[in-house]
Image 1 (cartoon, rainbow, N blue to C red):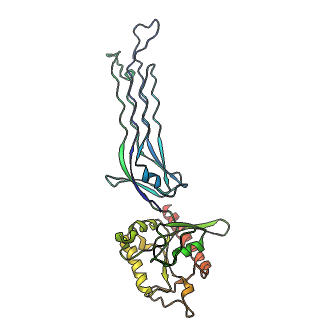
Image 2: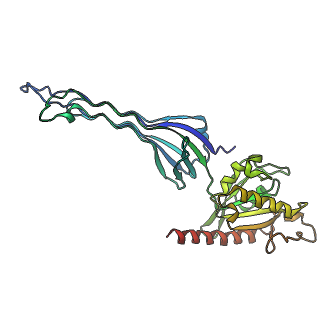
Image 3: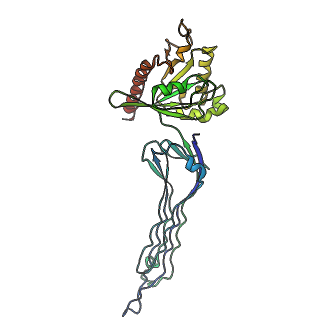
Length: 333
């Protein structure tokens, strides 16, 4: 099962203490202060790792502590800095302060990283406090504590296309046909219990990623059927494919239920470019799909079982994804 949320405690390492020391050299009876500074504490750093797909590590390990800095020593030697702690999380992880809700980082690219808990500063040694009026200071600073906080982690999958539909609408079968992904397929509701990603390739090096979400039901935006947890995974998608079962008793009602859930969830889901598709077209019968007066134009009829309409669907998605990429690039520039 996809583990896509976790809450963990992080703490930067404590800085080392400064040292009180005086020079002890032959023929130098009154050596000056030479106490070194303490080393800085290590920091807790989160990094997006494309090799990670869930927050399972953070689900079971709740505490992360970076190394403390070493104390300073004589001869103005600074203590060694504490070792940073690198925490690898999936690409697409959002990090928030659990107390304030402030977003600390959105690690939406491979290798993206952020310091979540900075290490404490090392204390100054007594050599730092020497003045014209106090040439032999006997004081030094203690190291500072590192930042300590609780952070909430939330994974939002990164996909170009999101498949949405009611339970048993044929999403998993379609994803298997489109890509090499192998989600569980069955003729009963809620076969898919967590989002599944599949890569669709075309041409020489073209590709886009498709996310298959568990079926939505009425009230999903309120969390019914874990819908709220699943809907957030399509917030980053460029295009939505809305699947309507060709054999449904009331396709119009099914469509409007899905649109209502997207609208109520917010985050602009209802405004995303979308393609309405008749799924399981192999069940349409000799007269073909029923009337689709609930949408503008005729939905594309596809079958993940027989392959009907798959090529046309891929071409349509290539165009929509490319258009969205171009729009975002021009807006960013």
